[in-house]
Amino acid sequence: MDQITPTREPARGAGPDRTTRQAAIWATVVALPIAVLVGLFAFSQIGGSGPVAGPSPSAGTTTAPQPSTPVEMAAPELAERPAVVCRALLSMVPPTLQDLRQRPVSAGAEQNAAYGEPPITVACGVPAPQIPPTDNVWVVSRVCWHSVEQADAMVFTTVDREVPVRVTVPRAYPEALQWLAPLSDSIVESVPSATSGIPSGCNG
Image 1 (cartoon, one colour):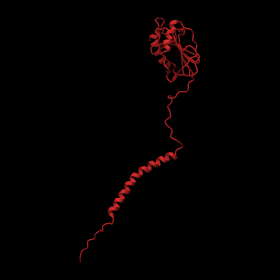
Image 2 (spheres, rainbow, N blue to C red; image 1 turned 90 degrees about the vertical axis):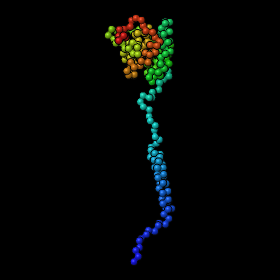
Image 3 (cartoon, rainbow, N blue to C red; image 1 turned 180 degrees about the vertical axis):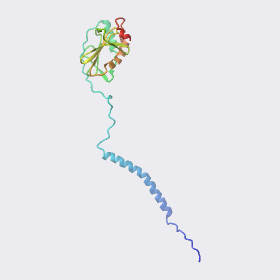
Image 4 (cartoon, rainbow, N blue to C red; image 1 turned 135 degrees about the horizontal axis):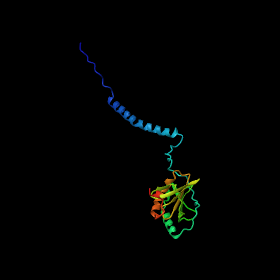
């Protein structure tokens, strides 16, 4: 009896079918990520309650509106030398104190300045303060200040300058001494040091 070895008949159309399947697989691989992206985009437009908000500004980067009206300040007539010194100082004071912009003053723009609301005020050519022996003085950026506490403000006056300068900081502003630093820099540049009567505490 002849031995018969079974043989497998070649599948008809195998070549074209394999090519078709490979094309279908690649089409699926390409189409699937696109479908996912389209679905996510549609969900973000439909499922959300509204447009996505951008990052909100952090605290401290925005400032409250400041009035542009002049700040009421007195402007007593100064002698020639103090007037010259004060004009030099006012030409050098900074345009802002931290986030407080400079405001106009009602009188004496050549000797007065103001910042913010409530206003921090700067007055040049004021009387020299009387300092009790028990009072402290404060050296801020090479300028020596005497402080007086009032109900609604801290008042600082220079005690080591040829022409005294007074800065009034309302209680609304914490850490009152910090507001003196940029003004002290301008004072050092424009107001000469006094030659006498400087309290010992100003020398450290």
